[in-house]
Amino acid sequence: MESTVERISSSVQSWVKDHELAAIGGVWAAAVGTSVAYSRRKAPQRGTGLRLIHARMHAQALTLAVLGGAALFHYYGDGGRRKRADDIDLDFYSQLPPATDADGNENQRWSW
Image (cartoon, rainbow, N blue to C red; front, side, top):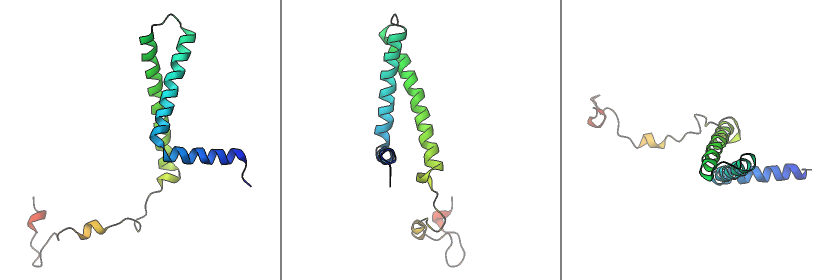
């Protein structure tokens, strides 16, 4: 029987998989808000513009980390399974003209 934590974790993972850009945007917005709040509390004498610049830099760093993690997960996780040679659809190549004609002469479409 599945525990509540496992159920919630799997539902969050499926939502993130379906809404990748929204999840990354949400992480970015949360990082900006958190950074501005932290900056306001730690250094209240800083100007608002400087706070926003620092918040944007922190959010960009976090977003790059999240994108890197997502790329690693996609490459090494379940979502990045590489197709085997049997699974690749080669129908495209059947639509191309032959490289040579019946006499063995090169087709003009393939000569540069």
